[in-house]
Each structure stands twice: as structure tokens, then as C-alpha cells.
Image 1 (cartoon, one colour):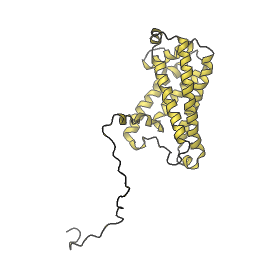
Image 2 (cartoon, rainbow, N blue to C red):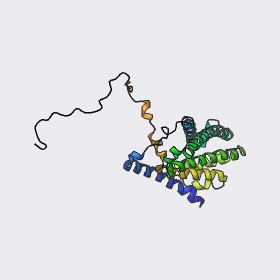
Image 3 (cartoon, helix red, strand yellow):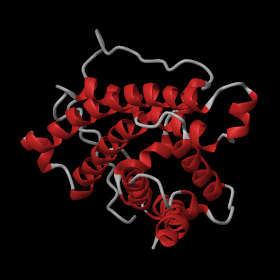
Length: 245
């Protein structure tokens, strides 16, 4: 079971995420959106959205660099395992709290505002609940990490992630003895990957980064002082020809 959950399931989740996302984008492109509820209720949205997205982006970047960078590079830079562990706890804790507070604000709107709740699907609400649970597991794992700052479990998690990404054998063996909170955190994260193509999370692949280098300016003209648009059409003059002539 350990080999399936941590050696095979990761590839199932990643394959489904990639292939199903491509199929959805090809067959149902008009469903590829974030379905923002800002127009229904702006209160809480700005603060919640900014906190959540900034926190999640920081967490993603931290996991990407922290897990996939070979430990030899940190050793060569003179960064000890303990220092890396403390940095991960501080940065991850701050980002995790930001994302959790923002996510709870967004989830509160979706659950307790009648208009937003009526326009939400089970997938919309369910994925937010799973994300909040994942953030809670991540923050709870900090408590475990504080109990051993030598970085031993951190190194095992790094070896597992690098074995999965770089297609090395024996990945599951690295996490066989880690704390159950880390295992639950990994499994829930993989499950979110699995559900990714079937939820609103797909909008992450369509971030409007091209606006950063878009040439020219967007011209917006004010209608202030413009003549009112015509409300109807004038009747056409009769030409004397019948339809079909």
C-alpha cells in the first residue's frame, strides 16, 4: 500500500491532471474560467482573494524550490539542514496563514451568501474545502517539524519528491517512516492534482502574464458628452420589388 500511495498514485494523479486538462481545454474551452463571484458580492472578496493568492503562490514557489533542489546544492552554499528547516518553517508558516485567512474569507462568502451559494457548484465549494484542509495539514506539520530541527524528515521528503519528478525508483521508501501528517499532506495534495481538471483551478494555467509584455497601450474612450445612441431604425423606403425578385 505504501508503494502504491507514494510510488504509483503520484503518476496517476499527475497524468490525469495533464491529460484531462488538455481534453477539457480542447472540448469545452468556454468552461475554462475562474467563475469569479466579485460582481455578486464585493465585500470580503478583495482582501480574501489577495491574501489567498499571494499565500498560495508563495507556498507553491517554496515547495518547488525547497523540494526539487538537490540537497547537495544547499550543502555547497553552506546552508545547513537546520537553517533550511527553520527558513521553511518561517516562510511556509507566514504564507500558509495568509492563504488560510484569505481562503476562509472566500469560503465564508460562498457558503453564507445566498446569491453566491446559488451560483456555486459542488465542485466550486468542494475544492475550496479541500484546499483549506490542505493548508491546515501543512500548518499542523510545522508543529511536527519544530520537534526535530535536524532536517532528517525534510531530506527524506526532498528525496521522495525528486525521485518522483526525476523518475527514480524507490520513491515510496523515503516516506515510509515519516510522520503521518506529512503523508496525509502529500496524499491530499495528490488528490487535488487529480481533481484539478474538473474544477475552477484550471484558470491557473491561464494567468494573464502576457499583459506584462503586451505592446502598446489599451485605449479607453469615455462616453461622457457623446451623443445618445439611436433607439430604433428608420423604415426603409419601398423599392417596388417583391421579395425574391
